[in-house]
Image (cartoon, rainbow, N blue to C red; front, side, top):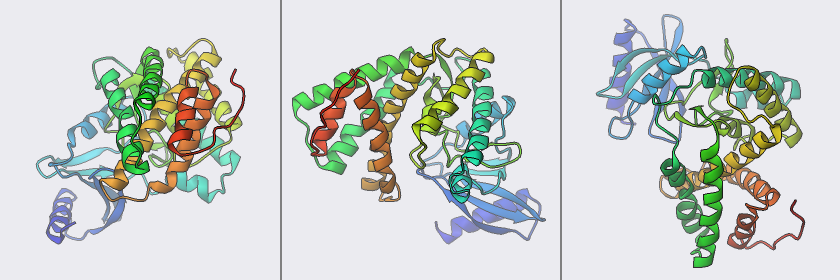
Length: 337
């Protein structure tokens, strides 16, 4: 960031906070062009978002922050805005992400249970507030664009593989099966990046960040994001327990989850497969196009999730074998039920 730009950001924040003495330090950065700074003034901490208007639009962040706040969950309040320069002044939700807390607690099951069940409660509150026509639809076009990141960026750019016509047909067939499932699911508000790096340990818990890309779409999407998280892994027995607890509470709250948990779990797994295909494409693009190599270490876990689901369901098994071929692995002989 240019020194002049940082100085302009600092001067703007100082004016909003009516102070001439203000400390500023990087708070975090994400996979986009947005940057976040923690500023301290009069003994209190705030967050300043810098979202260059040429690349980012602050208006969805402001609109979704209001929407989620009205739903009764803990999101940053927008205290001041300069849309021409892409500056926002926000309340600070602290600096302890779920991921940090879980790692600091050495993945203690008791700590994890408390955090994840709190995230379930917040997610249900968001979903209860859902109304069609408010957020963009997570429709076939958007879901398909996400899936197509995989052949373009992961297969072609990252693996350096040119697929045959038969392989492309296999991929397209499995994509269609996933899309049919995803689009048939009940629709609610979807945060779209509901995972351990975007939930903060706070009071009330959790604090929720990075919600500007929220959409109206499949009810299992955010559950798949957090329980099949690219940044931390839990035993499937624990995933199952937390998803069942969500399902029971969601049913009691009147949300349109499947009446049979087995059907709901299948939806959860197939939605996760769509997300993991997309994430592999995004992580590859971040590296090859944007020069960000920090996500490469997370690819093996994402691939593990994807392969496990594709191996489990006979309709997705062709993708399991295709992944073997693309990665030049020896197929494993087994049984699918």
